[in-house]
Amino acid sequence: MTPIDCILFDLDGTLLDTSYDFSYALNLTCAELGQTPPGYAEVRNTVSQGGAALTRLAFPEADDDLFEQRRQQFLAHYHDHIALHTQVFPGLLPGLVHLAEKNIPWGIVTNKPEKLTHHLLKNFDFPSAPKTIVCGDTLPIRKPNPEPMWLAAEQCGFAPEKCLYLGDHPRDIEAGINARMQTGAALFGYLPEDKIDNLDQADFIFRTPYDITQFLKERFN
Image 1 (spheres, rainbow, N blue to C red):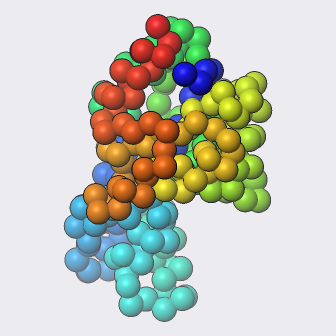
Image 2: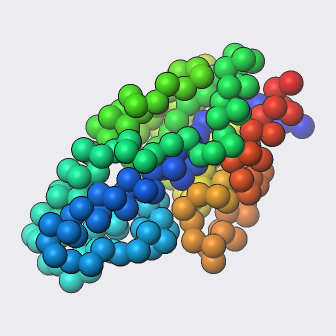
């Protein structure tokens, strides 16, 4: 059994369920423009692709200039309602408590921009503070490039091989593999069910947040 000394999480779809606030912001944007918003299931399946993909989901016919206006409207609403419904995935909090009790360092590596990431995270009081928060614009490159992963490992004080990276998207698993980390696939995240097989390269498979909690309790007993 390879030692694990540090846990790193993807943010949206792995640590936090942000899908309802993305959907809410898109609904507000569409309401302002008298347009029917996409359904929640469509939004949830698109969250991992970022704000531009969500905007295009709602406004598929918009040309470049109009699309950028709509994107900015949507992001403004999301910023203003960023933690209205967002929560730690149910079943995962006891795992975070266990990490705190065992003094196990953990952190976040996300492609979400720093401005939105820190604005969101200030609303959460985790059992222990993350040792690192690496965002999509912390470095000039982002996942699946390994550089953000290596920065997170360095800031936590461990070699990449001693880190487990948990994510819900194929690029998360690819990023972890590229960085020589151990990887865990969060099947409860935002990847559509028909694409879940794309996560099968992960070292560990977690079907629910509770499975992650149980894994953490067994590894750090």
